[in-house]
Length: 165
Image 1 (tube, rainbow, N blue to C red):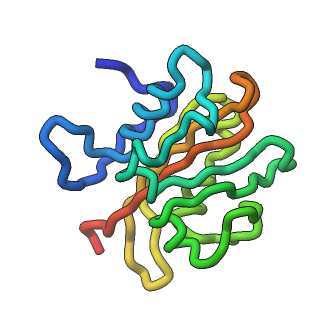
Image 2: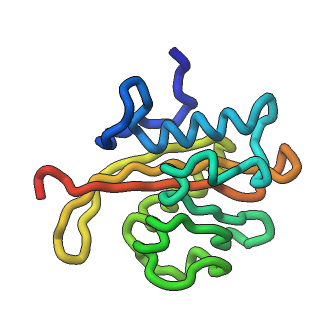
Image 3: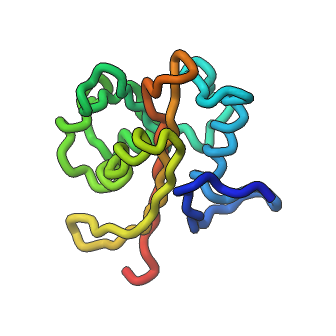
């Protein structure tokens, strides 16, 4: 069994999946990232094909980091993330969005990914404005246009109601 990269946590995301298929969205996206990366350090965004990850892509978003002075620009957003962000977000800087819960807890560790230059998965719990507690799992994967410089991040997140709610 392959070991997870340093900093990658295991997620507990329950979803009906075919027997033998990894259930956790973050681990399925990590496997896809590794596949498209091949022998390179990082894959390019041109390598990403949303049609090959149709069950994952709605939970994804893409951030451009190069030349953004530490305030990434949102370049793509899957449908599930877009619903949570409410409004047009593509082309906007992360700082313009404020605290949008699932998105915010996901991007809380962007700097760690950039410093470690490796994928990081994170999970936990947060409360919505109405007090509903949600469990979440997220992953941030470094991407590169030139194979060395991290030019952006492929991110994914999902959540479910906590059983304690």
